[in-house]
Image (cartoon, rainbow, N blue to C red; front, side, top):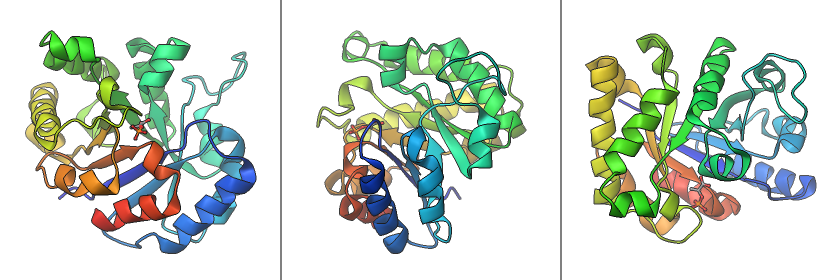
Length: 249
Ligand code: PEP
């Protein structure tokens, strides 16, 4: 039985004061059981937000992490530093990072392994572009990305990874993949995971859907057997909608 996950990616939004207001409202209203609620603030706010969330069930994610433990990597964040501040998860390979910052599959794999070595959970994002979907290349693309991200991992390690299928054409566009379109990809991914690891691992790993998730479409997405939650951008920036997503889960 996989516990549903609602993970809010706040991206490069909110002043620290606004992040704290939102964090406190979410902390107050978040269900204490039945769902894992995660928020990913900008790195600058992690420390203050960690204090605001301390006695709540809401967990924190970073929006990125580097593969090295420390060193000459200007502007980057190391997993041990994130862990020290109470961060439990890190989003890796988000399509915006791939598009604007040159993040590639090899880097995502290095980061995945580094996070696991530090006891953190990677949330690995992947998904096809509209062009790839229209050319019938969705399965090839997601299989390639997932296999690359998980290269070299044991089954035990893979079970600590969260996958997030985010069709690029559905992110921030208001266009959601239909529940059936998303389910088809998620079910296919379980086959890939079973072939790569084993049945138990494939059944254990959470696979989130991301792309214009909101309260009005979440219940139907979640009712699909292989969709285990949402990675949510826009709708995670308002306490009411984020909490509604948690209630639905
Ligand atoms: C995201 O950025 O991961 C995302 C899914 O954004 P949105 O929900 O706004 O489409």
